[in-house]
Image (cartoon, rainbow, N blue to C red; front, side, top):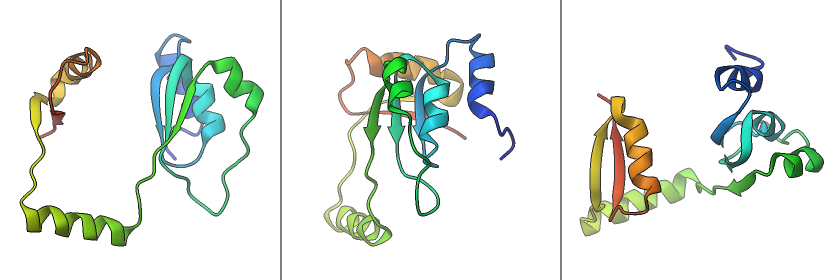
Length: 124
């Protein structure tokens, strides 16, 4: 890990405010709660290791954050899904594509709840 106290770094970079959204793929929810802004959203995608560190319910409550679990499925399910998509020629509906440099605009567009389809941030 390049920055062991990444939650502290998030706080420092946001002048103490915290991040509006945290995507936790390592199961470090206690750190995600430290990094989240008041009323932010934490998406828990998974965790590394056999068990995740305990989460202090009082800290979660004090943060006012919404904690969402995101199930991503197994590799076999991913492979089956992709085979189905290819077999049936499914294509996503793309509302708009933004270059990476306009990522903030993409999030604003999405937040306006006006897109019809996917909002894509393209990184070359």
